[in-house]
Image 1 (cartoon, rainbow, N blue to C red):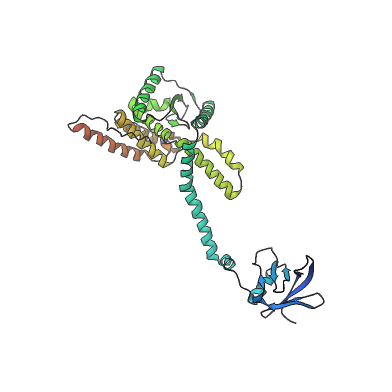
Image 2: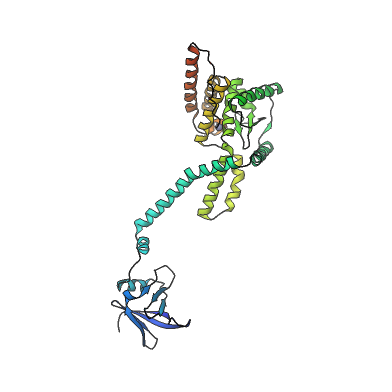
Length: 363
Ligand SMILES: [Zn+2]
């Protein structure tokens, strides 16, 4: 007898007992031999049932008689002999061996993750933010403000009259432009880098002394507060947190580390940086907010120009936070230029320059 010979075990199909055998592959026929050389089964390969080849699993060969044979195949030698003898290779196995298919599958997986990251995640975060009970969202905001007060913020040093005046003006404008949006205005100062205002989950808007000092007019401050109210109305803070948590969960699914998800939350809370899209949305809200309130966008534009001049004087590392996010100050000024032109055109026309009704951008 010639051909390749492989040690294995045989089940006769009637009892559970396994018997040591040798599988001989010769031409297109398979022969099962007992250790003493006696032939137990013999058939052409196409009449047998072959298990698929997987790494580290034995090959199973079923014979028409009901007997089956198991052959360990650590080096794949038995598998190759079976294929040479005419064993059919399943389409799945063929695809696995074809490297372009592996590359395509990997590219598909990356694309799927990309779509999930860029489209699915923001949508899911938006849904979750608007579904979240207001009480929980407010609690999230309170926790962030507590942490900020403890580590970064100090009480405002502005005159109490100023605080009352700007709060009243903002409340009046908000009641007109975005009546359904709940917010709470907090005045603070941040030593060092205080030209800023920001919105926390749940509607808390923090206005820093530094920004008020640079803004130089109530109307400019109202423009900035309108922008922050836009973040509140669109629930950007909560969506940002959910998106970051989603990234953590997604990363956990890929790399198998769920502990990272919980660990990333405080980091996210500490650095509420919005995306470019969120900033544009808030800018659009601010413009509509000012228009509805009958406040010219000119002052907000001047404020941005003044900020840009400061920005150029300073190193990049110390850019005020209100500007450090995209879009660029230039883009913002251009947008406001267009608004100021519209206002001027309206003033020049015979009609008095009333704000357009229904221009409020609150969702
Ligand atoms: Zn913003």
